[in-house]
Image (cartoon, rainbow, N blue to C red; front, side, top):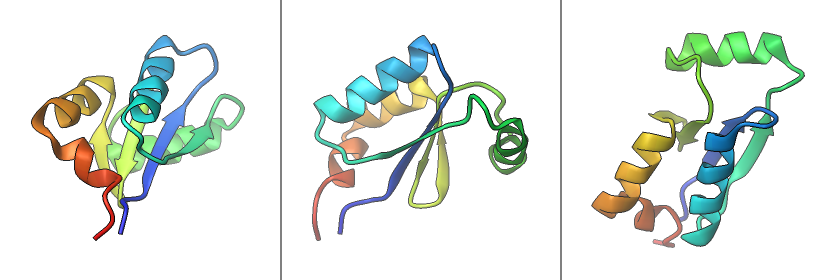
Length: 86
């Protein structure tokens, strides 16, 4: 089964645009949650992930990190498994 990938983003975030583009380019289905107008959810996400910057990517309920970690997952081949059905 394909992994559940959630991209947490904010408005006018260049790094978020890069993450969105990379996921799309690699054929990974993802859900995007725009936290721009939801500071309460931003605070809750920070508690869970320990990160305050965006984007934040969560894969199957586990925080991956931001754009750098997403690029590392692509390079290492980990990202390819996210869209593969078992």
